[in-house]
Amino acid sequence: MTNAVGTTPAVPALLEGKVLVVSGVGTGLGRSVAVRGALAGARIVLAARTETRLTEVAQEIRELGGTAVTVPTDLTDDASVARLVESALAEFGTVDTVVHNAFVQPPHERLLDADFDTVRQGLDINLLSALNLTRKLAPALERSQGSVVMINSMVLRNQLPNFGAYRVQKSGLLALARSLSVELGPMGVRVNSVAPGYIWAERVKRMVEKQAEERGVDPAVVYTEIAAGTDLRRLPEPDDIANAVLFLASDLARAITGQCLDVNCGHAHH
Image (cartoon, rainbow, N blue to C red; front, side, top):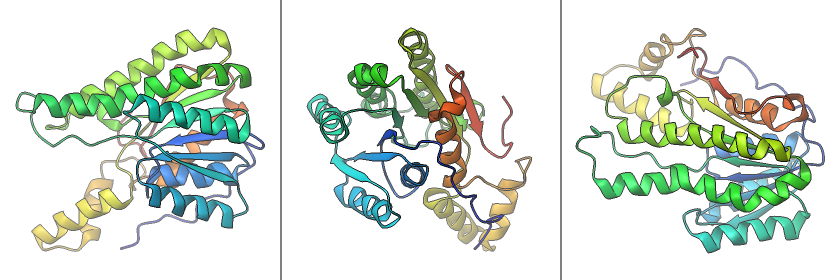
């Protein structure tokens, strides 16, 4: 099923010569941020637990003429995060932007019923890992007068049931970004958030296909129903979200900090 509205625009050289650390690199948004960051001129540090994914994205970047290094990282392990920072600085000598994309999706259930240990584990990766990595990179970001971009979620704005744990964690991430903006701002470091809605990528595509199969309809029917809730009548693709990240990381956004940019095709207004 194809629902693309056209070719993704070319990437201007917004990040020429900069170093971009991307945590939580997978097959969807993390990959798009990394690849489009490289196309924008940045040298990329790729971090995630799964080394095979890092290798694949790094190879893609190199084939496009870019520069990428991979650092397998457990973002919930302090020593592993320290190695990530050390590796990035050893390779490039500087870091200009860190993009926090790592997350886990808690089970869809009432917050009243959620397992407490599962909620705690979600806080570790969805919130505290971003704080730890930012703290360790703060001196480098101050030297480069750099920036931080947190990937948040439309769950901040909607009232969908059974997203309680995720909503709590992402709300905490928004508060973290705002607080870090206050603390890092006097050091010349900007901190912002991007909040996507449904992203037309692997996870949402599987959801649409499952619902279509259960109802005995074409997946395009389910897609159209979901997209009807947006002003643009379509769902954003990973590159759409990545473009917003690149803007916030660039000097074009040099007076923007402490803000959350919603990128959801008008699925929620803020």
